[in-house]
Amino acid sequence: MMSTRENASWFGRRDAFAFLERDRDNRLRLAQVEAWLRRRAERGSAGALLDVGCGDGRLGKRLAGLGYRVSGLDAAAENVELARTAGVDAIQGDASAALPFESERFDVVYAGEIIEHLFDTRAFVAELARVTRPGGSVIVTTPNLAHLPDRFRLLLGGTPSQTQPLHPFLKLHIRPFTAGTLRRALGEAQLRVDHLESTLVVWRRDAADPDRVVLASRLPARLFPTLGSFLIAYSTRVR
Image 1 (cartoon, helix red, strand yellow):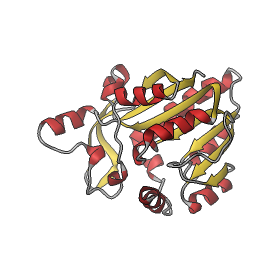
Image 2 (cartoon, rainbow, N blue to C red; image 1 turned 60 degrees about the horizontal axis):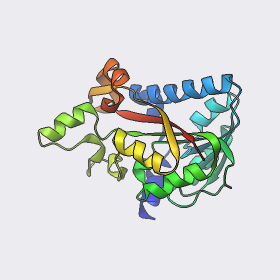
Image 3 (cartoon, one colour; image 1 turned 135 degrees about the vertical axis):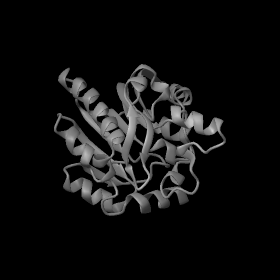
């Protein structure tokens, strides 16, 4: 599909994932997911983990350090090689199609910043559930369409940041979610959302360096996750 080729082309670039280290908001998103998975591992529930859209393997390497057996899937061949170098058991594949893994294989499935790039999100979430064992965990993160500053932008006639059609990579976001629609999408696949959290309310970024957050608030996103920039949903496959 065109969306898969476009995403693989953009995210298969050298240093495509450097922003994960430079962007305060993304660093916090990954830190929160890692902290949740660390607590799970400390309870003796590490097991097999699938990172859907594993990129260059930098997160998978960290999760392997917590005791998880990490597998990865990515559309870009360049990323698969980098992820393997990082110690992730990665294969090349298309997240918009059936996932190339047997049913109920994984204890944890993580899909970070993938769902907004796909046309058929129902099928994608159903696949996440299929490859997760009953009682296992599915973690989905995605930008929040209803991010508080974007609510003001839309009210004033502007375009929400996650639906910018002329942006070099935000144009790849074709299915934006709110907290409510994300909960419903997971629920339809028999994934019970146990906890939903967010990162920051980002008021301003550096126009010359969009990876640099200039002004942000942490407390509103902690108290009211539906207002934050990212949505992080932790769910359990109920059957």
